[in-house]
Length: 163
Image 1: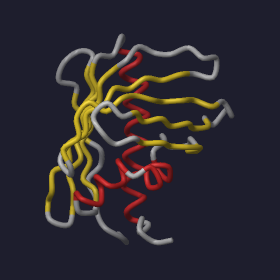
Image 2 (image 1 turned 180 degrees about the horizontal axis):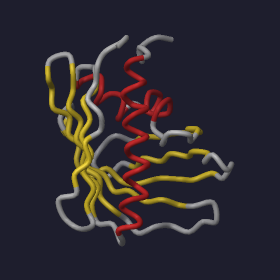
Image 3 (image 1 turned 180 degrees about the vertical axis):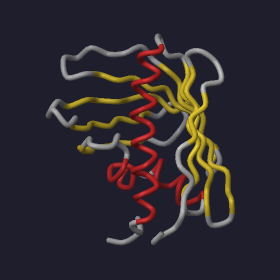
């Protein structure tokens, strides 16, 4: 196998209405944390597989907002946004999460906690997304987050700091 080896996504369903995805990424946690908190970097990878990131803004402070737009494979534009509740660099991010579809309908607010555990030159990223209204919503986000974490890992394998 060429390139750095990485563990696949590990998905755990601890309780109803929760999603937990863990991924080992071939980069130190300060860099992985930066990819989640620097809008220039996040704009390059933060979208599910087969989606095109269009824009990303981040006001990184408790009470600050994040906002991103992406184009779905069918051409529709989807907006995701929320508010940062907790930032502990480079260990943890906690933020609210809402989806606005092309018709303007907004899903109910959920909560995302991302932890970054340093493993030397690697990082174990654990994403916990809670408060889903239904199993269908949780499963939809499972597909999205798995694709996002695949893109995040690929971002580092492609030398994120180049260019």
